Length: 183
Image 1 (cartoon, rainbow, N blue to C red):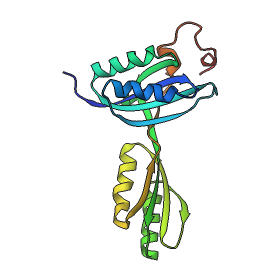
Image 2: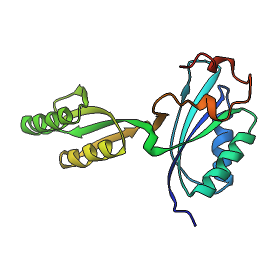
Image 3: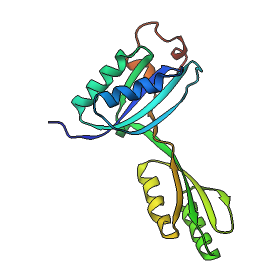
Image 4: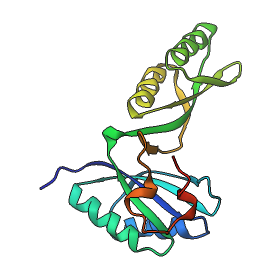
């Protein structure tokens, strides 16, 4: 049997109320927990892109992709190869910095990770970091010594490297006019 691992799905859907609920209910009905979910409009305001990460094997993932394709508001579904994709998430971290020394050390850590300091108070520092899972987990581990007061994550977003797009793999002839001008 295939090994269960993190799978990233990219899904183009109608940008309408209730579509996200319909997609997430499909995962729930099939007994899968969504590990990460990010949604936003594309260059076409009528279409949103959903990036979903789920723990599944290849057979389960194919089943999920096929079930997604059957949903009416779904335009396209693509399983992203993790090695051929660019995956990023945004994390905001608020850490406790009781002293100038702690604040300076936290700023140094943020600089090493090319993170941004987005808010400073007398006792806290808020850091924004964008990166892959290894980078975000590494900075979280390093700032734990200061005390993480709050943490929020966007969920992974992903695109394939190079010229491949979501429009090519499952598109039927003439289906999406807005995808024709993609380079």
